[in-house]
Image 1 (cartoon, rainbow, N blue to C red):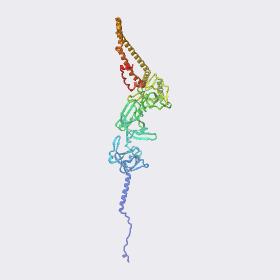
Image 2: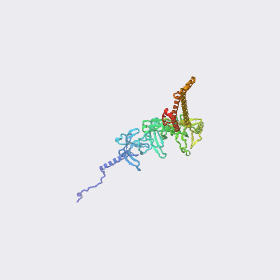
Image 3: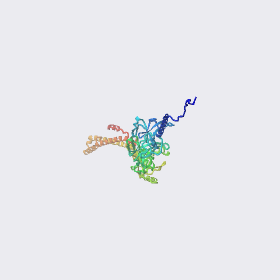
Length: 554
């Protein structure tokens, strides 16, 4: 076969062109990478929130809001490792990252009925959400504790934060008002308890411009809605504001008449919290002298806190009634009751110089020598409350006992009422010592002798009348007869029908009635000497005795 007649052969070459079908997965991959980058770039921070309870919190539904604008959502809710709290994880938007500072606050918004009214009603339909309050600090933070109640004031609010301490917890609650002369100038922000010092701490926030009222010597005390005090000064009723009437609160001011001190501008300055205004006033007097007063009379009505006065001016306070007796003086045989008092020098001297305390004590010793004595005095007749009153008695002698345990003795004198009781008792003792019964017996014998004399006179007058009626007597000369008739008339005047006899008989009967009425009184005085002051059983009225019955007894 010739070359001209041979068949043609195909030539195979490699194809270098890529098919367009592969563009689809490439583009999809690029879009995915771009979306991932956009998600990573736009993704906000993730925060961890610690809660006491997960009530109303749902993963994927509960929103995080700032000024009612959604800035994130809760993505996970779980228990912590020791099951003591709830840990919620929230995903925030990118723009919310600048809000997360060290002082950022979170709290759950839900329906509440609190001290300031009803709040969170809009969450009845939409559900609870977590409110975010942006912080102002420079330090960033991603783990927070959710507050149980909304904060009193934002971190950037102008004002002053103070710390009060008290030995007992439960005195104040978050949101309670801080009052100045009845006007709300702040709120209680936080309540904590220091386990080491065993004290409750109450953090207050005083709004500007009222923070200028806080001075170094400011005193804080608890305010209740109704304050009723009953003391030697009488009844004292105070009613606070409507809010304090429902929830209570805390009040403050500088005690009147005292130097307020410098202005407090530093946050978290500590002050003591007193139970009431009276305690705040009393504790203001830090300089005092303590004495023991020994009273021989009853101290019923005298209580701790009663005033110690000098001519109506309070110079101290009763601290303990009664004071614990030393073992050497224990027992009912000791008639004196010890009472511990404080002479508070701040009430008399506005400022005390170093060494003045000892000088004042020496002056009091001289006053004791001059007759300064303390006595119990009724402060309120309605309540029976007593107070301690001081007065100068120059005739008084210093007591032999100068010390009572570790305290000096303040000389005392029986009070006015006790003195009256002693005087009445002395009078009654003298009356009891009088021979009243012997006197009555002698008087009765004298009355019986007088009656016998009158009866003899009556008999003589009757015999003389018989004698004059005889003929022999009538024969006597007329002059003698007239004389006898005059004598008879005179004797007849002393007879039963005569006025002297009747007057004497009436006087005797009256005297017997007086004696009969006096005998129960004397008997009651012997049995109960104080019956002239205090009420007793009334003696029965004496029953008059008839004349004939009286003569029959004779």
